[in-house]
Image (cartoon, rainbow, N blue to C red):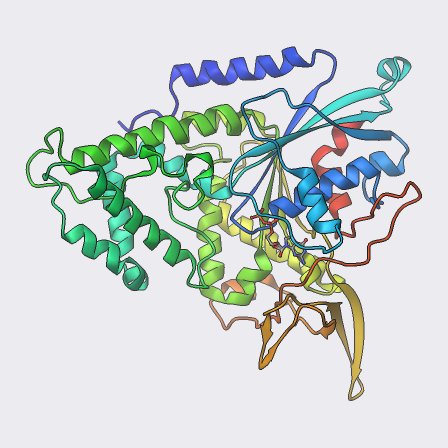
Length: 484
Ligand code: GDP
């Protein structure tokens, strides 16, 4: 029987954590919103935009609480959990809106922020009692960490077999060669030293990094903390690598035994607490996906993204015999799958991007139900760095986007300097998303990174207005029903 993924103590821990939430805010209910996605999917930009738009009552026509006059306002509040880092909202906003606008630093660890939302409740009794309050706790964490869930039910030997099989597969052979060579020089039965373990772990991490950086892969392989260690960089729990089982038994003090111990520690002190203390306490979840980048990189990248999403989504699924997902399942009641950076295409194509996002998740999730949670797909941009335009050429009209590509971005023979505005025809997404999944040719989008917008308007109260795509729809779906 595989080891249980949670223990009874975990279950009590989760229950107590939820009770504590209720106790800190007896009259103000709390909604914990998880924001995740693979590295560079747009989490930092999304949260900064969401918070700023709520704080300043931004341009949110699709956010019904605001348009119907029920939303009174938001303010940043102290977060009850002193042990968790705070999302650096002010620094990120300054990066985007300061004298020299640039993209903020990306997510590399878990962080959180609490917003206190005031609204006029439609419920008769509450309405008579004055404005109601909802604490919105936003929890930002790397999607790579979710890829660790399967490790909880894998022994070191079983994980090693899987990881080594992957490393030897033809398409990772080149990236894995130095690690496999280093592994070939050690013997699991030899006396363990920290130096040996560290060298192997580094070589394994280099392989994981290289397989991510080949321009094709968008996802990384577990352990999730090897590339995004958060605050655990250099700790022994992250200093291990897969090894083939030694002939005979691995005596204590051997390199194999040390690796095994550290792998178990990784599960106990890193993976399990993350799922128990953070993931299991979320009420709602948004999963951000850089769908356009995958489409642009071609069918192999789309397939890779689909695989990563399947693994990520397993954490939200009901039905498998995993007590941890059963627990989580009870809590999360809405999941939004958002294709980010929709400003890379003309707004007339946003519906098609949404259809691709739906197809990607449908494929990844199969028929599995998300534990009774509602799900929705949307195409969004936390910050709109381009605007729509039209170009007429030889009697034809093309829908283009207008923006300033970042310095060093290339298209054909042209390298951009970061200052010149261009009108770009990004290409067409197919009407039928199925085409993208049939293993045909890449659709050949013209995909460039753009600098964030430079001249931002201000609203009547002097606040900067952040342009976006469908953040109002995202907000309405994620929290709208709780502001009634
Ligand atoms: P994270 O790793 O998920 O936190 O990703 P970030 O939020 O840091 O985004 C990574 C990069 O994607 C940014 O530096 C931007 O270049 C780009 N990006 C993110 N969101 C948007 C968006 O809404 N529009 C555009 N044009 N680019 C974006």
